[in-house]
Length: 387
Ligand SMILES: *Cc1c(COP(=O)(O)O)cnc(C)c1O
Image (cartoon, rainbow, N blue to C red; front, side, top):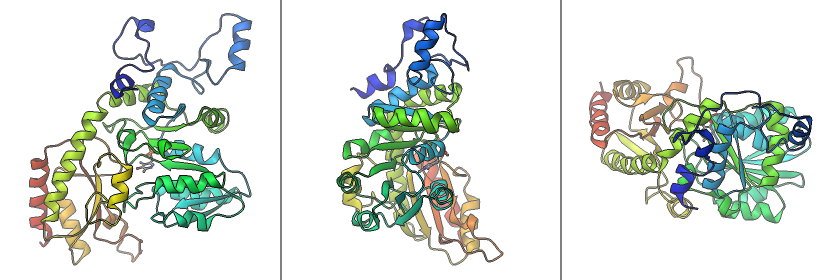
């Protein structure tokens, strides 16, 4: 399917709404039936009919159709946030007494789900270093039902060999779930590498404008319908139609934004490599990175996130650098138009609390600004770092 067709036409039916070019926001909780017979039919086919918006909503359905096509899966289901999608995908696969193998250091709330939440319901989780696929096999027990991946993972961007982990899972009849938010559906498609359920925080690149939350799970018709009938309907973390509309609007420009982010990020990284204030850049797209070949094999292009360690002697120097930046905003998330930093220093408190991340680690996200504009900002912040 052509990418342009998916983004501009698929799932839309303009003749049904006055040939409006932009899709309508069907802001309705309820959908009426004309006859008892019709209602009887709708109740029996509730996964594919419009009856109630905690269920199917036409605006949300458009987003789901496009996302399934982008990830090359039969179907997709949207949620009110990325973590709601992750939780639903994971919960759909486990019951008390089961065991899960999860990549170490995933997104923070995924970590919470794995470490605190699942054990409360009798599900055991092993966290493994995902840089070696064999670690998944080694951690596997008789009751292992799920391998969870996030490639690359958050903050330190360790890459998992998606094809190898999927193959290990298939041999053992184990389900695989991957968080694909980092790469966007344009630059990495794990279903084609054998992964069962592909999850996105649509809040990030898909929305792209820092004004909507959302999440999507893509997979087979059978698996998605099971999630629909169970986790989706009972936990009820639905995507509001207005947010679905914002995410649909984001999709229209996704290729342009990804291309721009990719190019500017390469320019910024090249600049940072020359700076004496930078001790290390953590980015698998650098040829010197030990997993460079693997990421080149799995991803079609780089995205906008990387981390670096400042050559700083104190927390104060890191703080002076971060606080001096005028155009990089200090915030969570990423994938919008605005460049961001997320300093690990924020976890280092004066009360002696010792976080696992080093004080000089900063995660960057490069947005849609001009490279020169961002470089000037970095230059002036570096000049203030030493006080
Ligand atoms: C942000 C993020 C999430 C969570 O998504 P929300 O939409 O904020 O719930 C999950 N995984 C990754 C990798 C993320 O960056």
